[in-house]
Length: 160
Image (cartoon, rainbow, N blue to C red; front, side, top):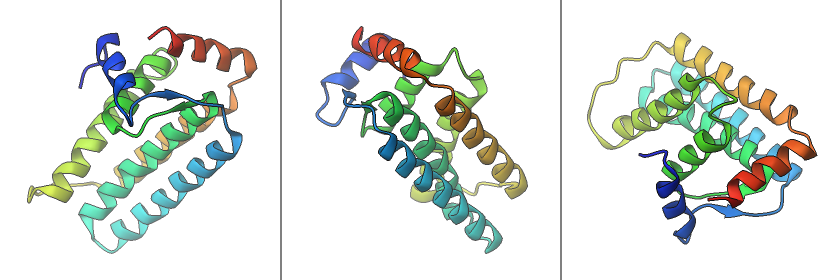
């Protein structure tokens, strides 16, 4: 997955790719709720020793948090790799680089756990802690967005 503008422009040309829509506090809240529910699912599956679903839910907890953030500024994308690249493009300077890396790795771990018979060793305490921290950081970003910041981010998105 690339982060360059060329890739993001490709994402904009796709039928389910990057779209500029109206910002929505309702969608932001709904995706934050989906993120929290995925976190609960991760914990339930981890406690039951169901590794592949715990890993999958950890990814979706992060992904839905990012989607909530994008909903706050009025961006939509149904292609996961494009969503991650867009998150990096718009917020890469506002978040620690490790957050983007964690999101990408979480996606890859989900794919490996669900579609391949790879054995993935997971420290569920670390997974839970990192996922919660990721979600907290995204919620801080959401809370810090005012109309001026949203307009600046939408302008950056329009420049693609």
